[in-house]
Image (tube, rainbow, N blue to C red; front, side, top):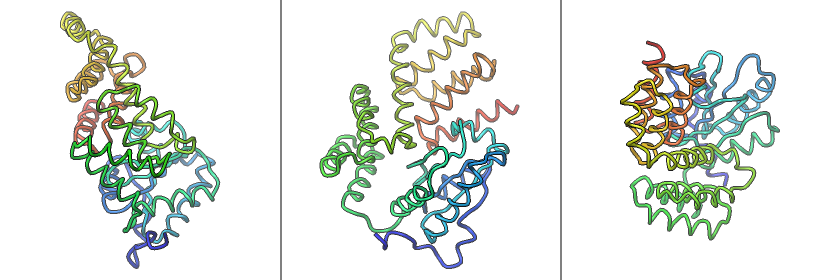
Length: 305
């Protein structure tokens, strides 16, 4: 296990911990996590628990000796980013690897748990893996290539040898969600251990399930919804329902177009329902997905025009 931790270059300590903004988040976190694991600490000057957790997290990151980097985001100065990341309370900590969130927690936690969190992340980022980790990596590669059958087969073997393996549960749930097997998704979510309930990928799967359920209800009414919008372009509820139906039908870009149109016409409608639904789409698609990146730029252009 020790060989998996560390590996940072001498003199790299100055680059281990940095502040980030909405403008630099992609480079500081998404891009940087392609090379090494990145911990993101969302905080604010008025947050009492943040003042304790932040230094403890920085110490744990330094102790990892380069295997993990840390990025700090002041949510008061980066409110748009906080909204996009669905930060509802702080401190909130997310871990990113290979451009996507892989772990996280919200609220103050004991220092021992912080060390365990960073150590686990350092092991994930380090060279040399256990057979289980190597199998998970192969399954993720198969999933990315669209070979769902192979990915499912590998994940099932992982689950057989390591019951409760969070990566296997996440992988199988994602595959079930892709196949629209919502009952299987629900069953897999019920197997998630309590300590992983707030895992970033689990949250994304729950959001995907919620969207799939809502979309299934509206999917058969796309013709009616389209007719309502043509008759009254200000029928934002019809446009929102149509977006859900399109998303459920894997017409994600068209679904996003409908939500952006709601925001363009009336961003405050129904307590910003259009923007909130769009953020859920982003979470389900993935923060580093090209469609999310492009759509976030379009959203910013509308909000700040």
